[in-house]
Length: 79
Image 1: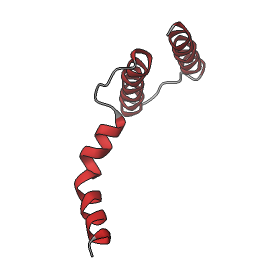
Image 2: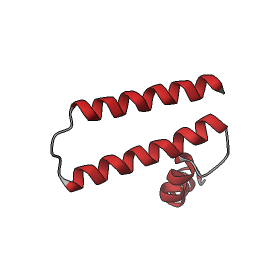
Image 3: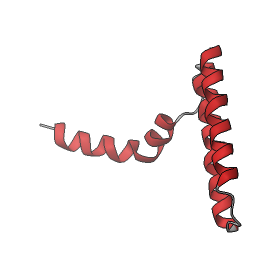
């Protein structure tokens, strides 16, 4: 677990350093999008580090595409 935490700290320090190097006056939309993606990656990193069964990307895709995928699968597997 310590290794996972160390890797995530290094990754986020590098992301922050890269953001500071390329820091130009960015638009508000770009900053909001970047911040949203970083927050999502923080959440997914927390799930990765703690090995928890919290809401994950698999659950999101199953929620979005699950019913239609099951319908297509049922159509092709019906006799």
